[in-house]
Structure formats: structure tokens, C-alpha cells
Image (cartoon, rainbow, N blue to C red; front, side, top):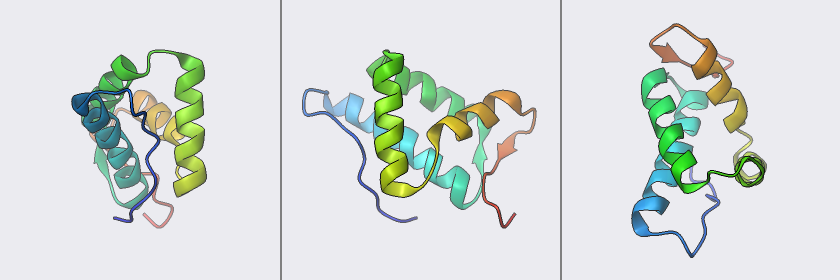
Length: 93
């Protein structure tokens, strides 16, 4: 996996920062290989506890997509819509 700039806030607790970074790590994994859809959805739920506002979510998703090229929105949408255990947004798969 590559290293990207993760959108985090200094006001977040260590646990909150870990939750947000773990979520974005799973987004990376969904694009670079495969990820368990239940794990991604659970991580998204944890992310939403840290970032409950839809407008802030869009801001963080946009920052991460600008840095990585990976759309968090598309990954979460695929996880919600899929019935497969594993999901991937890797175009070479």
C-alpha cells in the first residue's frame, strides 16, 4: 500500500484518529486489492461517529480523493449495494 495524506483534525482523540485512518486504509485496500465489505461498512460506521456531519464527510472524502485518487463514496456505495463478502474497485481485477 502507498502512503497518502489522511485528512485528520488535531482536535480528535487518538482513538478517533485511529478510526479515521483505519477507514481510509480500507478504502485504499478496496482499490488496490479486495476488502471484506462488512469490515468496510463497520469502519464507515466508526468514521461516522467521528464525522457525523454529511458536509464534513464530503470534505474529508474530497481531501482523501484528491490525495489518493480513491473515492471513498464509491467504495462505501459498492459495499452497501453488494451482496458479495469481498469487494474491489481495482480495475485490473
